[in-house]
Image 1 (cartoon, rainbow, N blue to C red):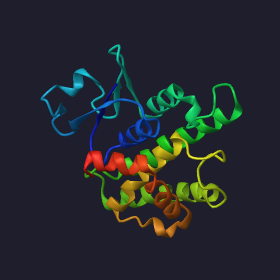
Image 2: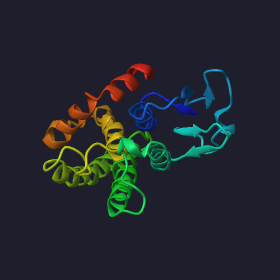
Image 3: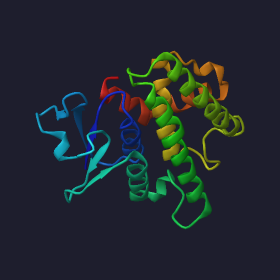
Image 4: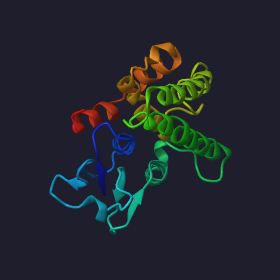
Length: 200
């Protein structure tokens, strides 16, 4: 498998999961501004959407969209328990969290990267985002991870996008449960290895 990634991007989440599962893979860095890989390949031929993450399988098929990639990877090694089995209610709970992180946290923080938004618009985005942080905190005050069963692909995703908070002068210490969550996940060997590989 090949994981197309860019530093500081959401592709860190599947990168962490690949290492959690000890799956063989190749990292291919993409320049987000030029849409070229380090070898000069046009990334748009891999993913016409133009953004990472993209996971190219051995048969040439390409998966895009973080939550889909994460679930695919978790199902390759179900014994690792990074996702509940298909057909059980906890799998639906996982999908609930993946959607929440994707739309509310990833989406909210993602808008703040837009330099065309004036300060008052960004303030409104942050106000909504902070309400979502409260929802996360309510869960993480009572358990270490989003699912009661332990670390999952949803946690890898949340950790990845919450790392962007500091880029916008958002101090996660204002939500102690989130700060503790970030510190906890940051200590996982898979996370340390992924960050070191991406030289972030």
